[in-house]
Image 1 (tube, rainbow, N blue to C red):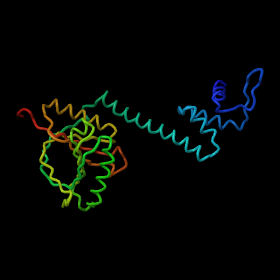
Image 2 (cartoon, rainbow, N blue to C red):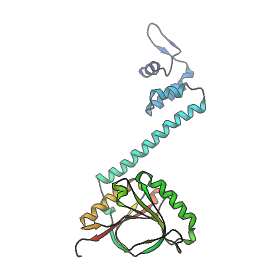
Image 3 (cartoon, one colour):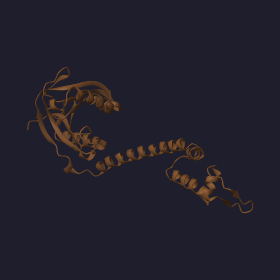
Image 4 (cartoon, one colour):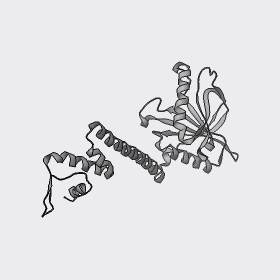
Length: 249
């Protein structure tokens, strides 16, 4: 009853009649579906003003659009919350076994690549556009390995920096770039990229603990990525941190 009174006071659901002596509110059976819609919207924390606009519109399409807009915002918020929980759990309860770092020396090689100065917030969009260009220029038969990327340190520290995406191919043409030989501390991040920053952080801590110094942009190799499968659990992203030893041995 208190709920119905709140709906009435907010102008969301007018009773058929109100007893002038007892104050009891009486509703028609036909108002039950409207009351249920209001109740569910409020359970989802839809603001009263939005609930009012949804239930008062006579246009079913407009009503559906208003409800769908709020549901999309809720879904986005749930996704952000899920990602934060995944990362926080790894930070609070790290599993030493899931950080398998190897040291590797990669020789110099020539690849097909596209470079640009990118803001951190625009990395995904820029990467997708650059990779589409490379994919169109070099079909599957010309490729000799998984794609990768180079990320300058300032991209992370200053929010903007140089980024390169590349594909190893048989005969690089106009986009040919020489990648110099490099020593890397390498770890593979398994699964979606929601918490890849945690893997970065743990690899960075390992580099410091092992008395290795950073030298050059971070390398990523997309062993299995979104361009290979939509199943995020199957993604495998290799992170290579350029290093050199400060002490012998």
